[in-house]
Image (cartoon, rainbow, N blue to C red; front, top):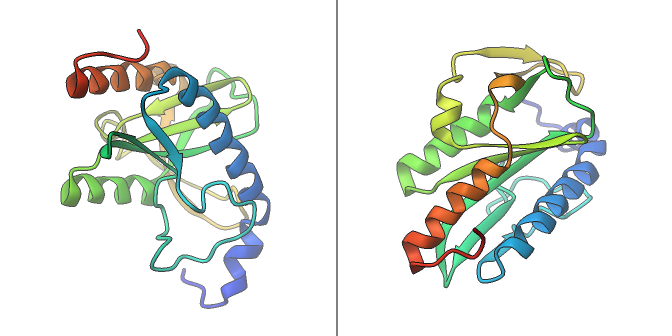
Length: 182
């Protein structure tokens, strides 16, 4: 369902903007000390605690963080999650439209997008190859008072955020011959 009321999404996501900015800050706080030679930067809007209407400079589902080495893009990171304790049998949800946008970027521009999910009791990271294993395991959930479709990933089959660190180490080695963090 599309809404032409500019304030609709602002009202629906009011509490999400600040929490989203906090999650992006957490991920930056983890990655920057591990990789001082990389440029790990939030997109202009990623740390905003206020609603930003999609525009030509901010497209819906753009990733929150870019990781570059000497001007070469290594990957982008979509940060999501919830400030809850994730229980062992709880599914982890990735918004289907965010996954599809990442697949489109990979297909059209060969950009690697990672999904980093922040919870109170753990961080998880997924690449497109991993998510593709679950792309047909969909659930429609009303987290924000309206239905959205998510990819559902069993917590027990999920990757910890260390998986991204291992992948990024490989990328750094391939691009420079040396890794920042071993």
